[in-house]
Amino acid sequence: MSTEKMRNFIIRFVFYCIIIGLIFIVLKYVVPILLPFMVGFLIAFFLKPVINKISDKTQKSRRVVAILTLIVFYILLSTLLIVLGSKAVIFLSDTFKMLPTVYANVIDPALTSVQDILLQFMQGFDESTRDVIASIGESMNDGLGDLIAAISSAALSIATNAASSLPAFLVNFLITIIASFFCVVDYYKITSFIVGLIPPRGKEVLFKIKEHGIDVLLKFGKAYAILLFLTFIELSIGLSLLQIDYAILIAAGTAVVDILPVLGTGTILIPWGVVNLVLGNFPLGIGLLVLYAIITVVRQTLEPRVVGKQIGLYPLVTLMCMFVGSYLFGIVGLFGVPIAVTIVVQLRRSGDI
Image 1: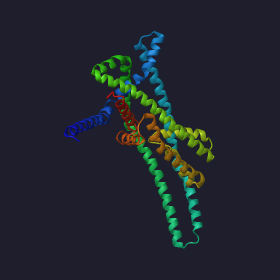
Image 2 (image 1 turned 135 degrees about the vertical axis):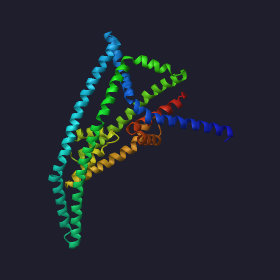
Image 3 (image 1 turned 90 degrees about the vertical axis):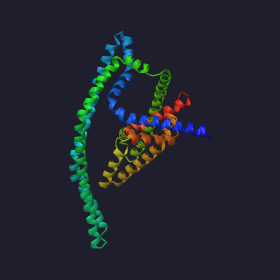
Image 4 (image 1 turned 30 degrees about the horizontal axis):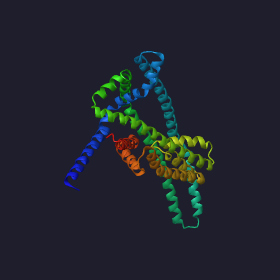
């Protein structure tokens, strides 16, 4: 490699490192600060077609239609959040209140029964061995009791933290509402002002990013719809073979949970399987855990391939983007980094950058 080529390579490498560093700083530190305003603008962006259509059909002022549409949107959103939030709080509260009772009335007797069965099985051993087994059983019993207490304590801690962060959430939500009102009313003024700050070449790239971004988002949604359908089919077959009542409904709910990165099918299948094992229902408990293992292996194997095929990235690159994104930015990065990389790749292929 000649000195000139090496110098150009180093300059280009440093340039891209600086760009990546700036993007990281913006996403990590700037975006969280400006998030309420960005959410307000996104709400205005998604409501724009509805507002324009209603304004054209009714021949009313766009400003009036925009305000009324946004008010209806927030009424529906608030109603949905209140209903879902209240149901979730009631469900979690009842569940954690029931844990000590379930432990005392169900789990503890089941453990005692299992311990008695083991002691009868070990009758042929000497007394010291039987004492060791009894001691192990008591330790497991005490440990499980401590686990239940720890879960209850953790739930209380989570509730306390949520309550302490509620004022900040309400402030951000209020700022988002105010920002969205300004954005829907003066949407075209704001966008014209932003576009006016960008040089001509930057405008071309910006519109190309918008065009490719919408296409990638649609393909990304299609990829995860395929994964959700596959998980639903696996769960339906597995739960039906295990002779679970309402297998299709349970499969549909669990498949939706599986799309959420933090939760996944393990949130439902693992505790369900473990409880059945503790209660002595070994076929069902083992079956649920095996079903979880199969779904996990299939999901981890197919996710990079399906997502990569839809958005045009090599599966290994897709997997790396998802891992790095989730590590740096959490759930947003899990989806955002592959989408961003795909947009950049498509822009490079089309010669726009």
